[in-house]
Amino acid sequence: MISITPLCLERKHNLLNRASMARRNGVAVASDLLKTLRGSNSSSSLPSNARFLSSVRGEIGTHTAKWMQDTSKKSPMELINEVPPIKVEGRIVACEGDNNPALGHPIEFICLDRKEPAVCKYCGLRYVQHDDDHHH
Image (tube, rainbow, N blue to C red; front, side):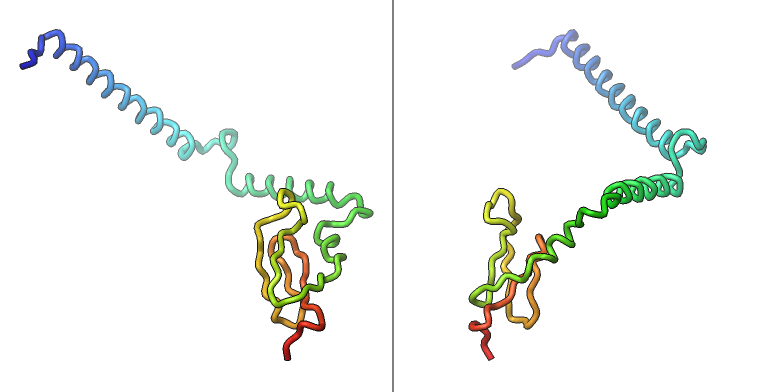
């Protein structure tokens, strides 16, 4: 049988008190943080949603304008549309986006049963069945 000395009981009581205080302090800190984030009405602490969204919209517009300043460069969509549809044999093609798997995308299996070219949802490459493979 194990005997519990008064010293052991006192240590256990002290540890429980410390744990309880730490828990109360942690809750108080979290509660104060939430009050600060929600309750502050001064315009200097956190931006209102409208002000915040307008600043984000402005940054996006500025970024796009900087990117589009050089009109001699083509956008990625324009570049991919310049690639003619790739003629393939068979009704199903597996697009990887690039010959090097490290530079491509997940394999996308594309069905070519339609009359117009089928488009890969990852890279935008277009595929069409070779004329000899059409089944009528």
